[in-house]
Length: 444
Ligand code: EPZ
Figure 1 (cartoon, rainbow, N blue to C red):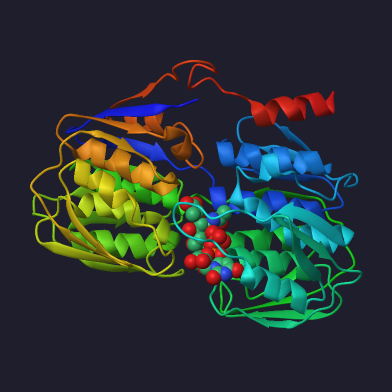
Figure 2 (cartoon, rainbow, N blue to C red; figure 1 turned 90 degrees about the vertical axis):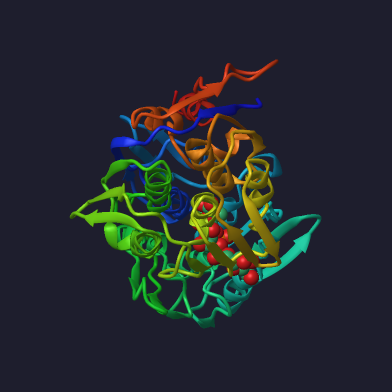
């Protein structure tokens, strides 16, 4: 399938949009369910391709998953019949690396393909291995697979050289069933890490301090409680709609969010010149009549400005008067989208981890290609503000993290549509129900 999104720009977005559950929290929880001994229900799970892929992977391992109404998953883990996640499934989804910790804790061994790099960076796993080895796991690399074994995990003190989200999550999940206490120092503080910790505590884990630099985990024998848990709203999806509202000179109410999680972006957009009113679980975002102001931004671990909003911000800064500077401190190559913005008339100079953006009066529609999920979202934002028609190819990358993206933008007044795939395969937009089909078969 080669789906494309076609956007006709120049229409201010107006109206309301409700935010879905957080992709990166849901993916971590769907790996964490490996630890569960009783039934689990997870609400507010976004039905996006990354979630369907992780469901395929855990179903392969023996987890039983069924979609209930809309966005609720019913899960139980009778016994794990497989210890290995197959390359064909894992290659689609880097987050499968979050199976290492729970599989080690639950069944003492696991073999998963080492996730490859991607368009934004090498994505190493040295901090994951450092932490799991400290807990007593023996890890080896063989023919592109990570093989990990541990007869009994023992609590340890682990210092993370970088507050890696994935490493924090893997070590936290493994430590839930380790003997004794584990301390993770310089831990990631992202809201998705806190959501995972709250979910695991609902299962019976004893995790303290999530959201701070030091997370303490008291190991328990098993996670025997059943739980019904709701995933937090997706702060990056919310931020993407906020950026689109400002970029098109519109006025949009973002509903069903946790404003505190989006504070870094709210502060930066206010600096650019947007007006943002925070409600309890809403954000009213609008452009004022004032011209936009150029800004400098550095992506940082939470609570700094999120790297996953960097491409979208670059689209807006491309038409912001003056010179803006973005420093990308998380990934070594997350500026590939700049080349695509240049095709639309942007003036962006990239030097290593620094992008210098000279605002131009307008962008012009062009044929562009999404190089990663967030670059794709950024190109749609650029298409919404550009003069003329923009065709974004590689839209399947966008559907990894955004559910009903065009439909919700249409609901805000955008002129946007999907281009059906040419040639074999489903007409794009049909639910391929890959993840659903396997599950249904399994439960018959
Ligand atoms: C999570 O990836 C998110 N993905 C990413 O979102 C997000 O960009 C990232 O955190 C940072 O916030 C999921 O949660 C599924 P990291 P993760 O480990 O865990 C270095 C999206 O678009 N590092 O915090 O892989 C690494 O090189 C995706 O939704 C090591 O050096 O991120 C990178 O530069 C993209 N050694 C930095 O840390 C390690 O062992 C951030 O990685 C691990 C990481």
